[in-house]
Image 1 (cartoon, rainbow, N blue to C red):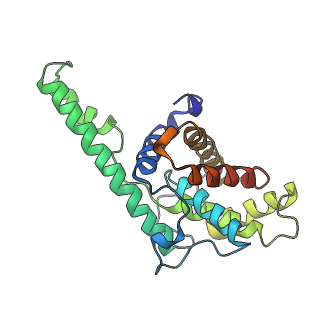
Image 2: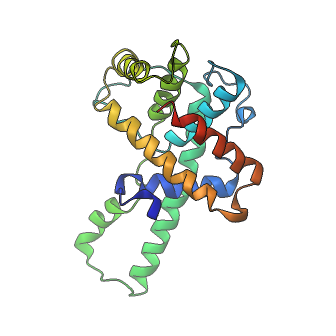
Length: 218
């Protein structure tokens, strides 16, 4: 948790990432949903591979959207992965609720009937996360490869503007959400590097290569 640098907004996502890594499904395997459209399409195979990994990590966080129907591009592939994320989140929620129940019933915590509804709402993993930020990350990285100089500051600024206004016009703070996704990547990557046998060496190498690739794209 030290890699989160005190950012509480990333805590739930980081815990879910650990579980996904433990299950061996937080990776860039495109064959996970072979019949679904919407995976990254631009650049060389390595570019698409790294984009997919970044997009899956970003999908652990929500895109903050105005309270109207979703407006933006769709991706069957990332929506499929979103279902994996939310199964893990729901399982973690069940675990948290069971632990809280045990603490209350065993007398290990103060029991105040009036505060229990508020306590239930405050427990983590209350709601499913949407896949919009996952799609936003994919769109951002895909669009960069349409630029003649994708790593230039001008290109990145232009693509951010295009993606936020054309693809996600109802997003509330696209730049900050994208920054949070990059911060989450940094935190999860630090965890991968120190994960011991939890993550395969081949996947650690993939994460390291993706991090080097991302350095010039963010």
